[in-house]
Length: 294
Image (cartoon, rainbow, N blue to C red):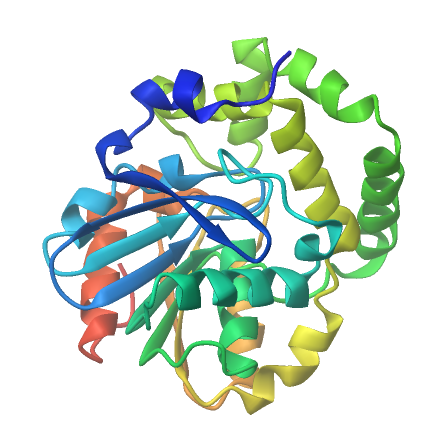
């Protein structure tokens, strides 16, 4: 299995015509940028890439200039330093990317771990958005056994140089990829699953996802949430098996200006399953009227 190569594998990537490579924070980023209006920064979650915005981006681009990078080590962004896989390190790296591109995002949208990066960036004053939209945000440490088990396991897998290649080999089976995605509570199209399959067949991409899980510590972020003054819209999908809706509810009680919106009939990848509904929530959040549910 070979790592993703932009010249080879990027030729048929979603929104390829809007892709560019940008040097910042000591490595090269793959960034997609297009649309009209105020700048909106979108950050995907662990194990994903810019492709995860392919269904919703045409709608958002009608009102905003979208800035969508592949996170460090993911997709076509490589090779980052190991420090970029911690939450503060990733926040700092994305901040340097925004500075290199001379972009001050007015609105930011993050899915899963991407939401944690955006909140950390805001708390560290790397960005100053008017609103943060968290899509099934991974914002609190895992409770109980999961918290004690998954991080040490990820560390062991990350330290084993053969594990990323083993994961990549397993991803060559489309059924294995479909089962993995279905395990999040989401039902995505075969085309969407195929893009994940191509990502998961890259040992470098798998290594980056494992590195994030191994080095991620959400405890300090949870402690700092009461300091967040920026308006936070927490979108929680009721069928999410990865980040339960209760996380959004708990975070909503910790921040000064938070709002929880539940989306029925969708899982962790709600923005891919229900792009029209999620886009409408983002549009309403941008004008300060996100509503109560969708």
